[in-house]
Every structure is written in C-alpha cells, then in structure tokens.
Amino acid sequence: MKPAASLQRRLGLGLTLGITLLWLLATAGAGLVVQHELDEAFDSALEETAQRILPLAVLEIVNREEPRALQHIASLQAHKEYLTYLVRDNHGNTLLQSHDADLAVFNAQPLEGFTTTSSHRLYAASALRKTVFIEVAEPLAHRHEAAWGALQAFLLPLLLLIPLSLFGTWLLVRLSLRSVLAYRRAIETRGAGDLSPIKAARLPAEINPLADAVNHLMERLRRALEAERSFTANSAHELRTPLAATLAQVQRLRREIPEGPLQERATQIEASLRELARLSEKLMQLAKAEGGGLLSETPQDLLPLLAHVVEDLRRTAGGRLHLQLPSTEAVLTTIDPDAFAILLRNLIENAMKHGASDQPIEVSLSSTALLQVVNAGPLVPPALLAQLSERFVRGPGQAEGSGLGLAIAAAIAQGVGARLLLASPAPGKTDGFAVSVQFAPA
Ligand SMILES: Nc1ncnc2c1ncn2[C@@H]1O[C@H](COP(=O)(O)OP(=O)(O)OP(=O)(O)O)[C@@H](O)[C@H]1O
Ligand SMILES: [Mg+2]
Image (cartoon, rainbow, N blue to C red; front, side, top):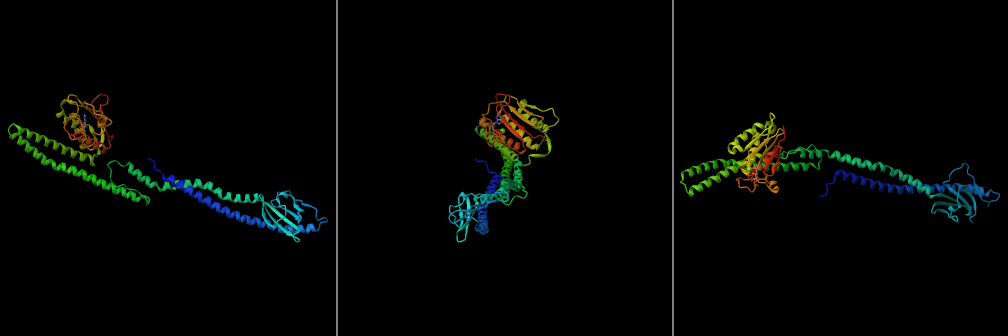
C-alpha cells in the first residue's frame, strides 16, 4: 500500500508551485509592458536628440569655409556615448560625427525615420531639402539592459517568496491541524474496551462530521456489545435455576429406579445436565470478563486471593498443586478480586484437566505481579496454540469442556491491561504447557 500523503507537504508544494507560476506569468506580462513603454520612451529621446542637433549641425556646416570637410566633434569630457550621431550629405559623404561614432553601425545610405539593425536602433532626419541628413544611433544592448534591470526587480522577490510560502503553508496547516492531531491522540491513548464518546475540542468544520460519525459508530458498537453481553449473562442466569431443579429431579429419579438400562440412561442425562450447567456457568463468566468493571478502585493484594483459590482447588487436585509465592509482603495490582479468581480458577482447572495427571502443577506469583501456571503433558502444536484463547476452540485431548476457559482468561487479561502468554513446551522443559499473565503492578 502507498503511504498516505501528508496534507502539509501537498498543500505546501501545491500552493508554492501555484504562486511561483502565477508570479512568473505576471512578471512575463509586466516585462512585455515595460519593454513596450521603454521602447517608446527611448525612441522619443532618439527622435528628440536628432531634431535638436540637426539645426545646429546645419548651421555649423553652412558656416564652414570648406563645407565638405569632415569634422569630428571633440568631447568636452571623456565619457562613454550611448547615443552617437553622424551627419552626411545626400551622396553619403560624412560631414560631421560625434567622437565615438562607428560608421559600421549606420546604414550605407541614410534612411529617414526609425530603422533597427542587428545591434542598433537608428533614427534619421533631413534638412535643406534632403541634402543634409542626421542619423542618431543607440545600441540595442542599452535598451536590453534597462529591460533586464526591470525584470530582475520583479524576479528577486520570488527568491524570498518561495521559502516564505513553503514555510507559511507548513505553519498554517500545522496550526489548523493541531486539534485534529489532539483528536488522533485521544483515540490512540484510550484503552481497548473504552467505547465512550471521544470529546474533540474545536475541530475544523470539515473534520467535525467525521468525529460525530465516529462517536455514533462507537455508541452503536457499545450498545451492540452490551446487548450481546447482557443477553449471554441473562440467558445463563435464567438457565441456572431450572437446570439445578432438573438436575435434582434426575438425581432423585436415578436413586429410585432399579439397576439396569434405565439407570444407565438416567446417569447419562445427569451427566449432560451437569455439562449444561457448567457451560452456562462459563458463559456467565465470559459475559463478566468481556464486560466492564474488571478493575478495582483500590489496589488489591494478589497473595491472599491466590492462596484462597489454590486452597479451594486443592481439595479436588490433591497433592499435585504446588504454590510458589514471592518473599514480598504484598503484590499489588488493580484487578477486581472476582475477576482474578475467575481467571486463576480457569487456568488451574485447565492444568488439572488437560495436563499429565500424575505430574505436579506449579502455580507461582512473582513480586513483579507475574502469574504462572505450568503443567506437564503432551505438546500443543504452535498453530493450535495461537488459537486456543479464541472462544470454543479446544485441543485434541479427551477431557470434557466447552473451549471457553482460555477465552475467559484472555478477556479478563485484556480488560485489566495484563499480558497473557501461552507456551508449549513450558519454558525450560521439553513438554507441557505454561500460561503466564503479567499484571501491571499498582
Ligand atoms: N494447561 C493446559 N495443558 C494442556 N492443554 C491445555 C491447557 N490449557 C488449555 N489447554 C488446551 O486448550 C484448549 C482450550 O482450553 P479452554 O480452557 O479454552 O477450553 P476447555 O478447557 O477445553 O473447556 P472449558 O474451559 O470451557 O471447560 C483445551 O481444550 C486444551 O486442549
Ligand atoms: Mg478450560
């Protein structure tokens, strides 16, 4: 999948590119206008100069003793001429020229009006019935220089504008998205079971409907989950009494009927009813495990809770149950005591049911709130191991059960923010099964 494009990057690049292009277009337009206006101004200066010099030149030539002689006009001060001029008669003989004038620049024959050569702009005017011509030349480079100067004045700000626009958009988008980022953090930091509406502070108008939609969705999800849970819990609860009553009836019946096939059938019915009662008990546990209220308000000491459950189960497990406790006074964590008892009971029951029946079961709690239940027994393949904490998934063993015990344990662990790990073989052994639950110490 392509990584999501950053809004900051996209807007920054897009806007900067757009502004730069528009600026360049405007510069080109302005350049054309400036060029046109400059040409007009320079042309008028050229014309003005010719008109001014011509009468003076004619006067000077007419007053000469030798009118056909060429005369250079000496410059008063050394300077570079932008405008050079040349006065010729109608045969092309040069009569007068400015000190910097280069003959190669001018047309072979004087042409009245404006002409442009490859390097110069020329203007020619005549006097004395077209017998004396003056031509003024201005290098085109001079005009280009002026136009380029104006263009640079337009282009220079662009150097500043590009980084400014990039930074400006970056900053603006960042500021505008601040509330969106806060919203994202609010979603990220909440626990898995927290489906309450997310309070978003002043989101942009474009995002606000999204936040509303998310809240609606969460609300629907919460209701659906709650309905499912309460249905499970209620049905299991409702089944309890009739199941117990029927079981009592069947037991009485079994005692009253004589030995024989009828007695056997009654025994089977009793076993099925017991199984049904166990299943409804597990469903109730699952409903509790998946519901809220798994955390206690005050930190709980796990040591007495653990001792109590183990003591209770020892009656059925006999001497197989080995308990190992830390030397610390207390192991505190914020799990609800009932939830902890349900979790531990399921793990130890599993070890008793599915583990090797002649091997010890080791239950241990460390001072860092790590609970472990280890038993010997056949290996569980890794593929199956990964699925065991799903509902109704069972191993290949012969023991009775509905496949809910590990799902209950996993749901409780998740609800209290603990980490539940299954391992087979047990760590440090070649066979067996180990469950470890790392609680968050209070
Ligand atoms: N301590 C264990 N040793 C070996 N196998 C185990 C152990 N605990 C669980 N298993 C395997 O994982 C499967 C699922 O366990 P889970 O507790 O979810 O269901 P169950 O014990 O079969 O039924 P239930 O707990 O609902 O009565 C078991 O069927 C068993 O194959
Ligand atoms: Mg079980």
